Image 1: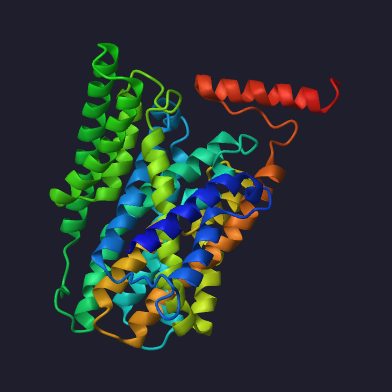
Image 2: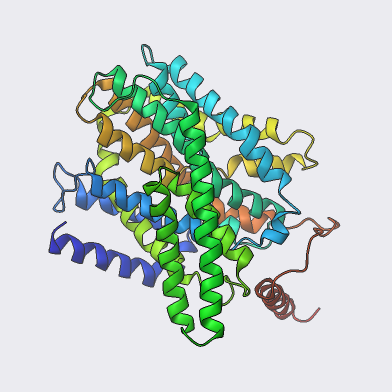
Length: 436
């Protein structure tokens, strides 16, 4: 990337940061802005900042971004409270996610003639994971019941890591079908389970030991709070990279490390700013990834889009998500509205972008139209999700609320940060209704 490109991209980030509050009131999100900017400025055909996403560096940026965000999201989950509401995310991950992969694979096979089933599996698995960042207005709005917000956050944190081995196996098999070197004729399920296990182990060790070490350093005066935040940023990267180095799943490691850090830390990491650097770093890099998406993947959509891809994208965001969620939540005790809410707010985001970039890199040599169709279908689904979920997240959070007469959620005492937010909201409400 040239100095000019870096300067322009940095200026865009600064402009977005200054205008984000005003734009969010009109339901305009960062991904929307940077996808559009990437397409206009980084288009390889005519943009002044031509970008090639079929490179290892683009993939690495996207993967590190996702790892940082997963760590930051997990570190804000209280493990003690999670134990009281683990049933819903467990259903979504254990039943809903496999059903979504199967449904997506079947839909791709039905819609596209001669599509190899392994490539259909890649498309279905790549679009099964969700991204809570695209519905952040829902995840952070306390008018939405805590159980639903936490379920969406945990689901999005773990499902991309669970889907990664399936995506990797399907992509390797697809490369073999197209006769590319490096494609595997067969892949073992044992390898996928080993990746998951090593990822969990690496994440638990790095997060747990890191929390103990940073707390100890802070108590003894060896490090300042700012230095602790810097160490936590490094821990997120260590968890991801060490898992990859040992043959494990880096995304699972990053999320588990965040959970372990939150559970072992003697302080409220989310309240005292320990995770602010991983969170801000992930959000900053995410804008870069969305720019790359607009520059490199949107042109693939324009070139290869067809009725089958449009139909698949619409189905992926509705039926192929909502039906598995509905089946998974049978007998959960959630109302129909809650189930529909969880079914709709399953946006496709960074994980699917990472998987699409993997396909671009792995299948670029084939130049087969079906390979291009698979990337286009994934990219168009993500693009549609960016727009639809970005526009609907704010209004849904404002209108959902908590119905009068609904019993309060039972659980452990809220954190100090949550108590402050609730108290501040109560003051605003009293001020807004004239003291009635």
